[in-house]
Image (cartoon, one colour):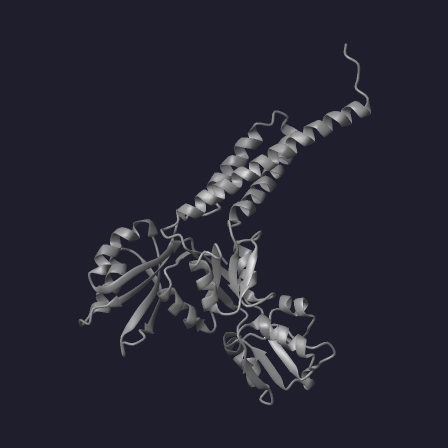
Length: 360
């Protein structure tokens, strides 16, 4: 009969097992990075819910002692979460427009929680950084549920040969931010991005004595107000931006609608339709023939696609001619085949990206 081990021996064995576990954990995460690279190169989604459930169930079933299985399941859930974070991290930087505290930064961190972010001054700087390879991906706003399209970025989608690999829906909670010690009665000027100003139009209409000034970005406006230290100046931005720049909230939730969301596109140089894609964005111009637009739209309907957005944008240098931007939902895997029929009525037709629809 073997002798019982003393506490020192038991702890030594645990230390040895822990070292091996950490070595295997590091090895697993390194392989997860390779999986992430593979998926990005082919436009595949990071998260596959069905496979994740199957993997967790299979690994848990390997545990012989039934009372330990719930703990093993929790362990595997955590490991899978860490793997997803590692896979989401791109090989390079992720660019966004604005500065620290911008809504675009929040959107970028939502999609790439572990990425190195690079702030850019203008929207086009984001597109340019991705196109030149200075950033692996970029995140830009394209539409707000209250204020409509960010037309500057719709136009830039047509000018740059980039692909949409995903989208993010970010809830927007605008806050009126002031310098420390300021009150509403002190305010004379309010700074923010034009979209945020439009989204808070009803609130601002109740303060006709305020001068409203456009600023390139909500977070930039918060930074400016903080740097001025003037109690007469306020910014419309997020609560996070206020925390970053040391401002105080004077009024919260000042949007016209509490159902205020902004849709962001994740831009990449990699083209193609992602596996499991259920949404796509396209750009096209039409032949100058009566009924061309109706024919294009009829093809989408006949093929079973749900047209969720259509917008026309003027073509520079060609008066009264327009480029059409559309979002469609449906079986996007076969969209490439159907584009041949759509293209019969178009002078130009381009698939911007096929991706998985963001969930609220």
